[in-house]
Length: 147
Image (tube, rainbow, N blue to C red):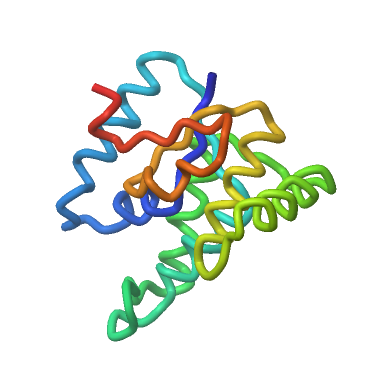
C-alpha cells in the first residue's frame, strides 16, 4: 500500500519538545513493523527546509542552521523512499487544483495528493487529514488513527 508523509509529520520529528512527536514516532514504527513503504517528495522536503531554516520569531519557524537542517534532511532521505515528480504528476496537480478550486497554502496538499495518486499510493500520514478529504483515492490518516 505505502504511505506518503506530510510535511507536518517531519516537522514533529524535528522538534524534540513537540507534544505530537511521540505520536508521529509511534506511527512510523508501526508502519515499519507492518513493512509499509514510506515516501516523501521534493516539495515535502522543500517545505521542511523552509520551516527548519525560518527564524523562530517567524510563524512556525524552527530557526535551525543550514547544517542542522541538512543533517535532518539527509536522515529523511536515508530512512524513507523518494517519489520523483514527472510531467504526469504536474498534470494531475493542475487537474486537482482546478477541479477542486484549491487556493492558498492548500495547493501544497494538492501537490502531495497528485504525487501519491500518480505513484499508486493511496495513504497519506498527516496531522491535517481534513485537508485531503476532497481528493478521491487518497486516505489521509492521523498518526493516532493507525493504532
